[in-house]
Image (cartoon, rainbow, N blue to C red; front, side, top):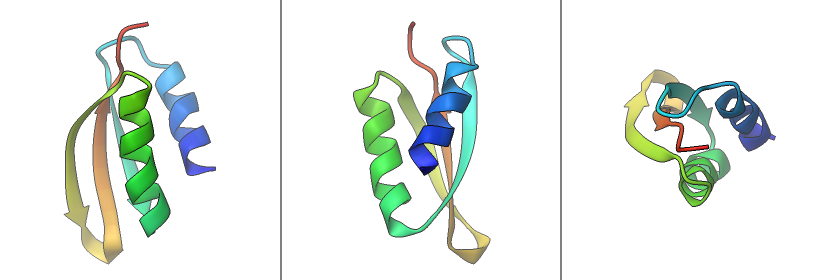
Length: 63
């Protein structure tokens, strides 16, 4: 479900725009960066934040 929300947010962006996603839990941490890359988006960076949250920055790929 987390990737569905991420995908909907990416769909609203123009190519090249950046989306910040906050992830918690092992499954989203593993699946979202991989799936986003497979769909042509770029993972710009991943940083650990407080409370076991991963801050993930994605750049929307070309249309």
